[in-house]
Image (cartoon, rainbow over all chains, first blue to last red; front, side, top):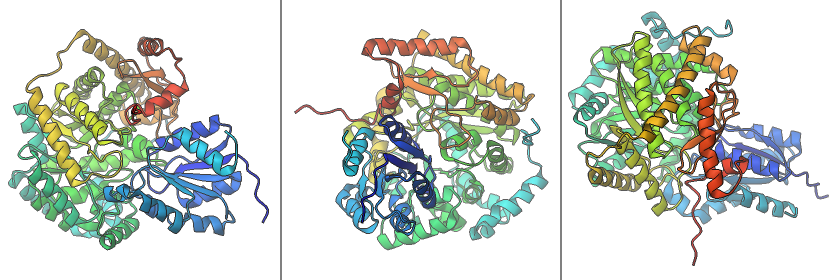
Length: 146
Length: 490
């Protein structure tokens, strides 16, 4: 299969019923400043809206923010819907305060395994990551020099 | 002006009971359990006043005695987790006898997505840990809410209002909890995306009227007016929305109001905000003829990002408690040591109560002396709040509900960051060298030049001290002013 062209285009939003907008707001500005085309969906974003925006903008990646602890529920099925929509190889990141129970947060390798193996995300980040790190990691994943 | 039909006018009984039947109790099957309002009020009386565990009475008594209530927060998916966790805190921390509870519902309930909450309850049962970030009160219903109320010794309050908290509040009040928030503007700006302010005020008029009916019939209520926005909002804007909302609550018949201040973590500016707000709530209410409303100053903590390490988070908690006590608050809502990572655990909450109680003991009766600096902050804040209130009242021809809606359109009612699509968001805020929150750009807010100049002057002091320009990078850096951990030199 021919490798798709990198557009430097991302979709950013907070998934589910989550109103926390700040993580996405900071990412939006950081990626814009780095020359990315950003579609910023704000907060309380259903999965379908992420996918429609990714199709319209021919996005390289969907950066999902989740900061109220119900990330595992809200992110379930996003990869399948991407595949159904023909976005097989789109990069999916999730980041924020992903899980509500402290014991789950403390067992981060299991959260990572769950997001990567069960939910089909490329990466998941704790809320200690900052926007510039996220930018550097996506650049690397897309093969773009900083 | 014809665009909006909303007015700050008390709901008639006919309107109230029509809305109750058509829009509220029918939202979910547990609404049927609370159809009889007389029975609800009688049960609430027994469970709160009768049991000596009424939230409004407790707050008023504490204020009169000059003592502090601590108010931990808790919310997990299953009733047994709630009773276990809250009992643990009551038994393993110095919460009793002067404590209260702030219970929160999960975010699906807050968005009225009761099927999703039901799914979360099932998953929590299956996993043996809470998969919800709060207690889904609507799904569990009044009988479960009463079960918790009987098991817990301190008075309880429910926090469950995004767009429409009416059914959640009906259930909570019928269980003898305190509920009903008077905060339409706060809610749209903090938690909503698509609803108009006009619709939110209409929904909140019902919720507020419900509390007033309980109060009039012998179960005292102390609904919250809060300014807990995203955590990156000016003190003047916070004060303004509280004063505006006090008029909305007083018109529906509230007699006791819990002023819940989300603070910005600057002792001088926060104290000034709390004092100015209470004073102006009283003044504006009196101007419109509401002369018998009692306002009690209480506070919540910083609403922005907390540091993700125990030592630093303890520092945050300690400073917040210190500001609350020195600033003159009666009840202090406590965030938890787990704030940066997860929803509160019982152990984290018990530890936080211990920290708070120790600080209270160490401070004794000390209060912040009202210095020239506090008076100067108060003067600037008053100028700002009055300018905002008068602009809205003028636009609404004396009606604050209408004026607020028009103020949103004009970009006056606006803050830096909000999920709400009607927020114009042209405001930019930064911290000055003393960590007070300042306008870098007041956007479209109708503020006097004196206010804008004062804020800019303060910011220039920081720029000079740090040798860097005032720019957007500074705005972004300030979002993490508390949460970014220092690098440790090895």
